[in-house]
Length: 220
Image 1 (cartoon, helix red, strand yellow):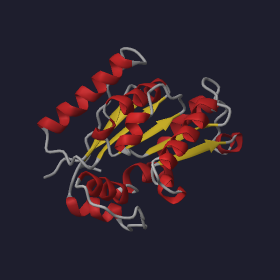
Image 2 (image 1 turned 90 degrees about the vertical axis):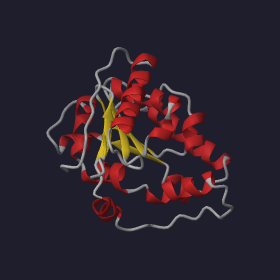
Image 3 (image 1 turned 180 degrees about the vertical axis):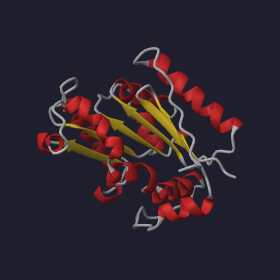
Image 4 (image 1 turned 90 degrees about the horizontal axis):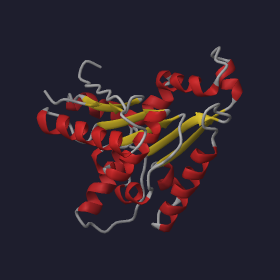
């Protein structure tokens, strides 16, 4: 996509310092380039996933969606739920570095928090996805180590398609909530989001915290 800006900050730590730097870098690009603010995406792998989870605590409203790969969750969940930023949690069932218990626990907590917020299961599926890969997934790709194999997620059309294409209905709900409109939260499938992106001729900003990225579109 020649309309996409990819920003790849390097981590100074796996915590708050790098998370704040990632937020500052995202804000810089939004303020200084003609970025479509509804197409700003965050992806974090390994240490970048930890950092990205803290970004979701600090400024989740900056991002359209977050792809969290082969990592664990360090940030507080309340700001993320308040912002209703969609999150995709992808990892190996037996990740050699992190395991998968943190990701599964995070998923379960998010689901319960959204239920407490009054959302039903179909609505919650639009906001949080858990994708656990078994060893067969990695074997089929000639990968022995599940943690290292998390790098392959960036080549999966269904995963990257989710990151870039599945959030128009969430954005609409958030707009209506911000406007104070009373309505029933019923999301249908909105169809060709990719076509809408193409029609807008916008670049995407994709931020990666070392192993994290920010993608965003520049409007021409």
